[in-house]
Length: 257
Image (cartoon, rainbow, N blue to C red; front, side, top):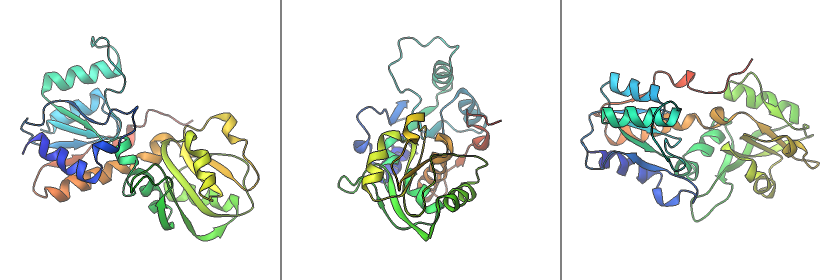
């Protein structure tokens, strides 16, 4: 099995060509021609994930967030990105990320959020020829804003969320995994009464009548993509060694007290 074979399976699901212009999805360390003996799927490519891959006999990691996002001027160790790069190169571990590529397919990040909520008639929030950011759908039944808060917390297994003033009625829900404040207006244009995302800033909680926003957390809104990527690879290569990080549930860098 080659690294390129794993990449081909992922990009059949989420083509690299659809990534956002500012993104750095794809293969950041390694060659498509390298032989791969096992794949570890995680959320962020950290030094700890590389160590886990090596211990498990995997020489390729696949994550949602890219390891190398902005240009690196030096790789000296002592910071999270450099440490992970050094360990991956030394150990011969290939590193691949499906970031906005997995955000822009309905079977990816935002679609997974919609399916968690058991929404009906799920479509892309911004459809760009079959790909696009966000998803929108209809709740199984209309709810008050307060009921919708409880419903979302239950479906995502959350103890806390950040919410604007609850509206009287929620029927249509839009969502975008990760840092989605820039998609608030698109959510309103979709006819949604509730928009769910992460990394929403203070001023975005001043919402117009009939519309509310909910911040469930960056990690919490996207983590389902790990299982999706695992399924994509394991279904394509059912006898190949593919595993999900044992530390996935503890890999969120944000702590709640």
